[in-house]
Image 1 (spheres, rainbow, N blue to C red):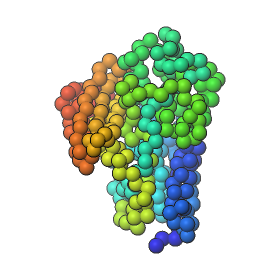
Image 2: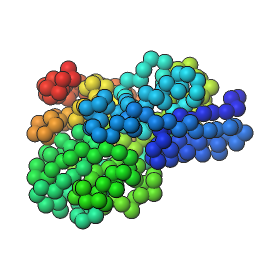
Image 3: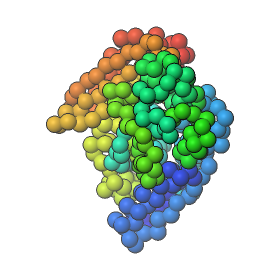
Image 4: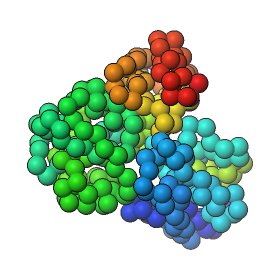
Length: 308
């Protein structure tokens, strides 16, 4: 039995919450172990003056953590699943997927009760092309501006009146005990969540069966199946944060229900589809969803974005 585990994590408040959460769960399971956290600053944390889609995508949040795993400076890395590239580099695996927090987007404003209440010309901040295209499609009278930085930075910019409202992931706000800042939750029918949103992923080097066994109690099968379907869909679409797409699965009465879309950035052209199937076929359902979206016109949108 291994007697220590080092967890690699970004140093943002949310990332450290996630790492401490996993640390606490493991410490309760294995009180004899020394479980520590290696905090790191990633490229994605350092470059804050450009939209993620223009500087290389959300993979910038995980590369340095994977390097720490490769060099043996850490055993596992804890990620927000929505930040994990759809295809992991050779030699790495997702050892466990934690139980999902609220996957919805959150509307946060100091002056307005919801998106519908925003007057024409109101400036809304978001870091996500997925959110941007859905906002533009529903509310063409709003001005959408990029919003980078950690959650506290984004809230400060709202409080400084740089934005009439901002859109954030509900999960992050709730985990940091900032749920009181949520003005309204946006249902998936209005804003389909990002692939993996609200779920935690634990990554390790391939071949570390000892770690996979230790992490097994943290693995949440329902969340894992939903995220696997979403990621398979996104993978089929060459999904990254340069592609405005959403994918969201839930399991109801032993049936997995996956919804997905691909959109032009302006929100004018949207291809949507949904599929149902058995949870044990999650990856296959996701791949079929991606193929259907491509056959329905997503390939043309992707080609214009330079992704195909």
